[in-house]
Image 1: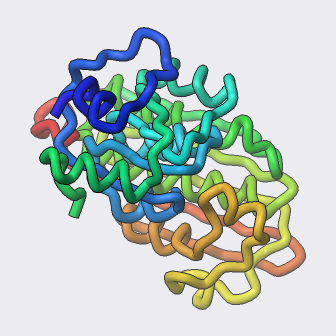
Image 2: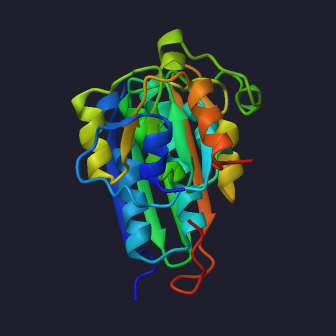
Length: 114
Length: 151
């Protein structure tokens, strides 16, 4: 599905400027543990997380995550957003819980990263 | 043609989380410029970032030195302590001495060193408690500009 569809399904807002909302993302990875993202995720996934610090963007950069969806209404600081814009990793934020966000996306066809 | 095509040095300051990942980001960018297979770039970036985070999380300071040649990536980390008491134990998945604030950042679950080992072709660690740790890894680059993309 496209990043724009992910935005609609999770009722999210886009926090980064100049994000390409037409990029195709076919699987998701949900974790608050960046160690696990670095160890177990597959490249090209959507990272769904409740952590909002800069190391989330760095972990996404090195693990080749295509975009980040912050859950539970959490918002990152401006430095985190600036780093994501520099690395061209779109950031979305939703008020949904991680469980609800993952469930909605899975039902609509976003695959697992297993 | 010289063997090493690019090398660099970074000073890593303990607890400087604002700049955590900057060195690994440069290594990733150089490898991308060279047209290295994306799966190899990912392994190098992840191994380097894990080691970079270890220095920033656990030590007062350290130095990262990298060399990239047409057929290998070599990254060396030297820090000034506190050292690892039992390297074999630290290599076990789940073993961690991380304080809570590191876990709150999504790290410190005892996956770092095992993940470096998983991604590197060669890994050497020597550590002296109270003095510091030397960690070095090598990743072989099999083909440049010929490997299929694997993003």
